[in-house]
Length: 196
Image (cartoon, rainbow, N blue to C red; front, side, top):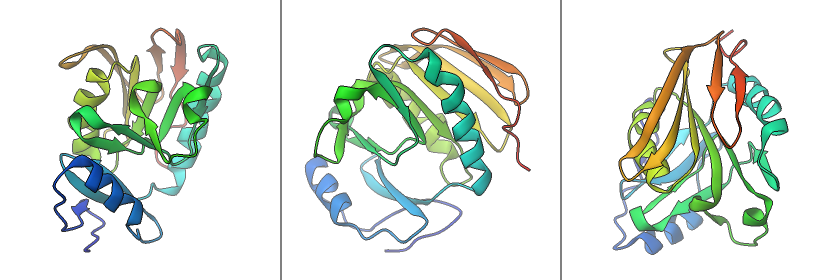
């Protein structure tokens, strides 16, 4: 397996179906500082986030937690959410779902149980965060997808999921407040999201 810092790479194996990909992902020995996801039929390995991303993720969680739907929880834990209908498995940077969805011994969580997902882009993941994940999260019916574009220093919230991805979106530069729609119905203050 080759791992590059600038662009995620596939591990070189080509299993015949999604279940085999999941099995391979479970057995994969990913180097420290990297995570693995299934994107477009490939196992993609990319570097973990920069240090200041932790601050940004914590700020998002602190602001959204009081507005979570009843019974839901928001996490930054590295969980793998599976979307078998489109053969994808993502480990979002921030995710919210009903607590029942996480009450399992399985490490493959149901992607359709998510109520919110956020991705912080990096040079190696930005394209997938802005394209593939928009379509997959929207088609799965996830009510809110937040993209924190760390390269452009802007936040985009997408909602109204549909078969094409999302029908509605709003973008604000870091430092401004971004409206987060139902089921959260709050303002996200993006002050403090920029690089040090």
